[in-house]
Image (cartoon, rainbow, N blue to C red; front, side, top):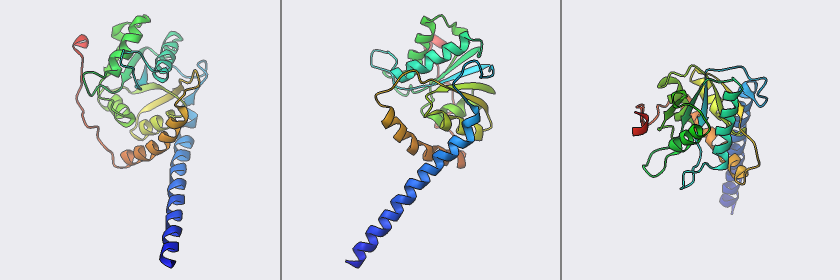
Amino acid sequence: MKKLKKFILFSVIGIVLIIFTILGIEAIFLRHTSEDIYSDISKIPPRETVIILGASVHSDGKLSPILQDRVDTAIKLYRSNKVKNFHVTGDHRTEDYNEIAAMVSYLRERGIPQNRITSDHAGLDTYDSMYRAGKLFNIENATVVTQKFHLPRALFISDQLGFNYFGFTADQRAYQTEYRLKQREKLANVKALWEVLTNKEPSTMEYRLDSSED
C-alpha cells in the first residue's frame, strides 16, 4: 500500500511538473514575441515578403477556413502596400495532397501575379517552413501570417534562427477546431523549443517545384 501511495504521489508530482513546463514554455514564447505581433494593418511596418504558413486543404482543393483566412489576410497586406511578394509554404509530401497548389491557385484567382509568388513544397511543419524560408529561400525580412495562437511559436523559431520577421494575425472568424488546435499548440511549443536548442535541420533542404512552376 505504501508503494502504491508513493507511486501515485510521484505520478501527480510528475504530471504537475509537466504541466508547469508546458505553460512556462508558452509564456516564454508569448513574452519573447509580443512586440513583433500586429493585428492593426495601419501599424505594421512594410516588409518585402509575406510568408503564408500552410494548413489543411479539402479533397477538392478548397482551402480550409483557417488557411483561407491566412491567404486573405496576406492579400490585404499586399493591397495595403505592406508587402510586395508572397511566399507560400506547406505540406506537399504526396501527389494527392498539395497545400501549395491550392494556395497559389487561390492567389492567382484574386489577381496576384505569378512572379510575385514563391512556393516551398517542403514546409512540412512550422520549424521547417521558417528554417527553409530564411536559409534556403533567403528571405531576410518578412511578415508571417497565421492565427494568433500560432504566431508566437513561428516568430520564436524565426528569431532564434536569426531572421528578422514580424507577425500579423489572420483571425477573421471563430474556428470549430480552435480549442483543440490551441491545446495541440502547447505541445508543439515543446517540440519547437527542442528543435531550436538542437539546431535541427529540416528533413530536406532541396527545392521542390511543380511542373507549372518550372
